[in-house]
Image (cartoon, rainbow, N blue to C red; front, side):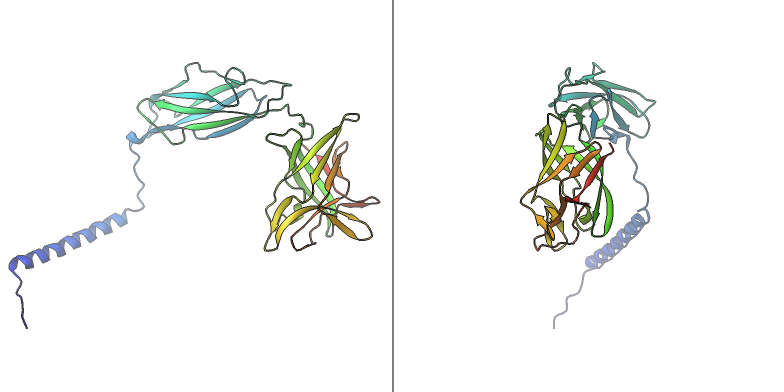
Length: 309
């Protein structure tokens, strides 16, 4: 057996590394004791940003106020320049900046300044919703944060179907008794002859996320009244483990009847809308529980919507 003797040098280096490891452990322990210490914000990291990066407002709002904030240890003197970028909304046509220089001046006493934009109301003219954006360009002595762009949507109030858009209270009687709920009719992004309903059959909402369904809209020019025609067969949700929930018409004809191949019709009344027949849903396995049957009349089952906004 051969034994190799360690040199004095090797012994010294081994002790050195042991001491070094000990110091490193103490350093780690000390750093762990300071884990709850709040990090220090360096003044060199100060920046300008939009605290809110999107706005939506009606075209008759008058003015849009967009705050710009400075994040710093103390309020600082600086200037922040910005740029308004046309989209479907055009400067001078749909809006006007009240600050011709497009520069905000911070005097060191406040951290926030406002970009103020006048909104031009084209009353009686249908334009559709219009969009533009505002970008922060530079800040003297400061950085510009990632929140440097703000999107703006101007909501048009002259939609041809504005008279029927809004919030309704639904009322019906189903197999469990009377039920009421809130629903909304909203416009389509591109087609002015279509509306969307976000809660046409609410009873399955506890088991599934509701999906909006659309209706084709017609107007009786003689009476001025509208009719909504929801194509049957639209998906309105997904029931847990039991397949897609499909919109159907339901009615009485000796027994409960359902039909997903017809349009579900709602006629406008003095206070809202009323279904011609009942409204319900089935899934892929013809699961019947949860039909929204409506109020039973001689004509069958109906659902009543009352406009509240």
